[in-house]
Image (cartoon, rainbow, N blue to C red; front, side):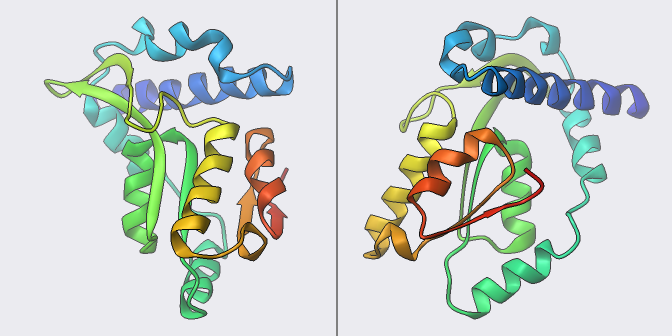
Length: 173
């Protein structure tokens, strides 16, 4: 049922967010439990429709669309670098007209989750170090200093990128 699919998708998002959040709070790195992060049998077989149902329920925080639009109107490039999943980040990138997004990739085969995160050419998981690296790389590609970058974050894994940016905004930390 759609309700069951929604619960399964929410369970997936909460489970990974909670696990990663706990690891960060305890000052552990994502990579300490990389086997668990790369293979999660509890979500194997969850239909893609569960992710679609979660997408339908996503609500942006008040002011996000205005903030992004004002940044873009001022000529700024906008990036989303998330420890979440591309399934959601790509939809947000398109919805907000962002220039770039980077997130973890869930493997989906035959319309269902396999329980795997896919390795990417840039690495295996978006953690705090990867967020920092992306900000520095994009600054270099744009020919600007990191001091000209603005980083907005809401968690401990955002601190590395926030430390290299010229202006950091902690949103509901």
